[in-house]
Image (tube, rainbow, N blue to C red; front, side, top):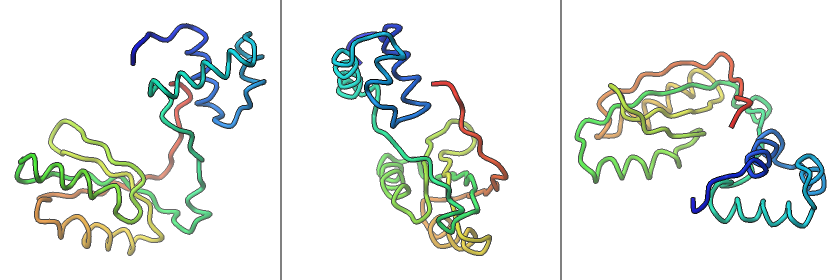
Length: 151
């Protein structure tokens, strides 16, 4: 990021985090700036990588994948090649919503969704424990997910 965010930029990010589809004229009015200025500022936030994209908040149950879990994964050999391979492959696995590289006893957390407990078990067995780099996988079911309101 080349420049610090001023109060208007921070407010634009806050508003767009709450509603990524908020129209430019509403953003401009809420921040007290002209619509053309607002458009330029949002474009600048995107170009600088502050805003990386706009995403839909999808009801996974409506897509037939009501079960969510966090799967903690520990990699055995900490070679750069194995880490890079796993990091590249994991987000493309079926049902993976997010991949987090974490500190502590585990190396990664995968946020996954599945159709059923059996499908979740099959995902872990077929894609994680079958991976020669993975020495441990521990699954925690998610009972409820509430998105934070702050950026």
